[in-house]
Length: 509
Image 1 (spheres, rainbow, N blue to C red):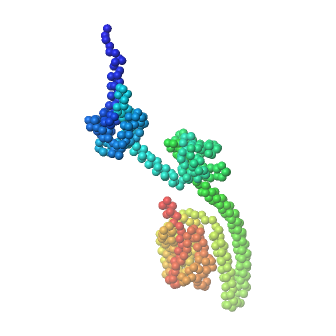
Image 2 (image 1 turned 60 degrees about the vertical axis):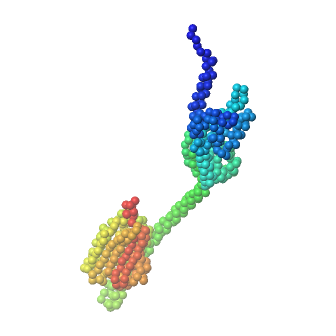
Image 3 (image 1 turned 90 degrees about the horizontal axis):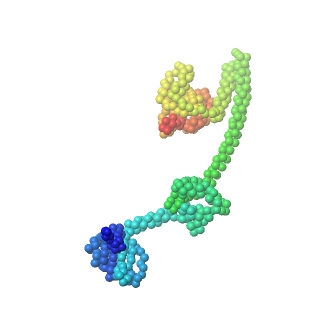
């Protein structure tokens, strides 16, 4: 029969071998120290952590790896171990061979001989320098972030996964109308009964469970019944959920007031528009009535003058005949004046129909309409390139007709008349002009030109009723432009009007 080794005799040797392997391959420094504080053993991890080889460390005093100001620490450790005192793990400072300090977590246990006497200590050290540095950085960052949260203009609060208040800044406490001490550690549902039934609480729950962000405008009713509004940003954080709150109660109140004011303004505008439409209808009826009632006696005057002229043909002297002609002419002028006044009054009430107008083509058509009136005259036209504009074509045509008609009229006594139509662009305005070399006028009276019935020349020199330029100004004002004139007596005049450059603006957009 083959002999076998006794397994029981092999175990102590195997156990010692395993312990030796643990010490050798441990990532922690493991070393033993005698009762006299001399290093007895030194594993490879101790070589790596402290920088000393086993040959350099074994037999040396433990103060080899102690900072000068911590030598007393070793004496205290030996004393405590000698008295059989248990020393719990603690953190301390040690010195590497290169002179740099490292932070270590240290565990000590006594080493006893066969009789149970303490003859030294076994020590396990772990380098926690990087861990401590990271921890300090984290704490510093936490302090910075906390300082940021504490000093924000917005409310900031953190709730854990059980909806307990973990953190609040002063603004959040103000929003909640409760002191921070009364909230920290308390559940939201305890502090605000019924809040679990709100939309906000539902979003908090979703944020915690699904780690999703949300934004909302929250109506918050306090226990006393008052209401406030907050814009909330709800974000997942490791602790649970972070809520950023901005009080928009005053803003919402102002918006509501603005809406009320807007609604009231719309009501007033509607009422006034109805009154204005009613007044315009009455004015239109009045204008028609006045026109009809005034024209009838004028027709009678003109008719009876004509009858009187025929009845007394050959019997009246030259002066009497001239009187009759003056009466007839005045009646016809009065009729023209009534027509022009009606046109002027309607111009301010007629609806504008804005469209794209080719002003160059319009100018040519207007000039062509005056061919019979200018026949036999020496008249030179200069038509510069004119742009297209957005305007009411009928109204704009009346502007050109009036300005061109005036230029033709007031150059009537010139042997060689010159009339120019042109334009230029100034910022966002198109400037049009009609220039002539006619009789001009004194600029001292320029402000009267565009008024109703305002004329700077005698009727016997140039006919007219003084309505045309007033119509021009009213039309251009309705288009958002302005009118003006420049002249010198007996050296001609230039009449200007401006229009918004809407064609170019629309193209640029």
